[in-house]
Image 1: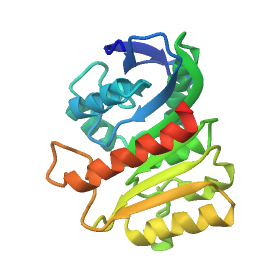
Image 2: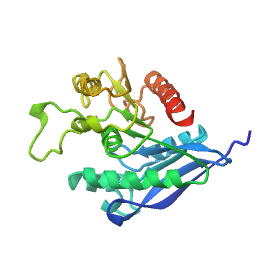
Image 3: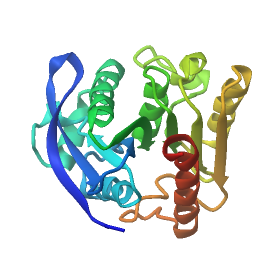
Amino acid sequence: MYDALMAETIRLPGHGNDEITGYLARPLGPGPFPGVVVIHHMPGYDLSTKEIVRNFAAHGYNALCPNLHYRALPDGEPGEAARLTREGGGVPDEQCVGDIAGASAVLRSMVTANRKVGVIGYCSGGRQSYLVACSLPFDAAVDCYGGRVAPAPEEITPESPAPVVELTPSLSCPLLGLFGANDGNPSPEQTARIETALQRHGKEYEFHTYEDAGHAFFSVDRPNFNVAAANDGWQKIWDFYGRHLAG
């Protein structure tokens, strides 16, 4: 079987008719291939996130990561763009939804697409994955340790966006959640609140919590990288997407 892929920076339509950049990787074959929108973590549109995009392509997916921090520093250094975004209050939810909608549309329009698209996010991107899965039509969603999906009442301030968990009745697709028991954001108490909401609204989901893992256990270039949890987590992702996107 021909085994090759192409990866490149592209421009795509974002929220409010803005044009932003994104990193696209795709298998070089006839397809049809499912699509995955990869939402980067808070450190931004960096090399480790692009490696994740290529990993999806190597496994037979068209994958696209939109640069959600593009407006803060167009085509600039990812870490600095992330810093400027944080100082500006983060990526507004409405803007995030618009940018992800543009990325999803690109994947569905590709000539090698099977027209099924999933979304996955890490850290802040995990929260955003939950957000967009409740706001847009997706076929499967993965939340990798997304913080502040279901904050406790005392953690909510007047400046905080509405808790994403309140959007659960609108969840458009099955959800996979991957968490660390030693994480503080989301803590096991927060993930339990999410699970309660999913059960209350009859949503299809599966959650897995790794006992010896903390936040960012997928990040190979960070101290919290956990080999066992990451390897098992990837297998859970391949199984989940295999059932809901590739099948």
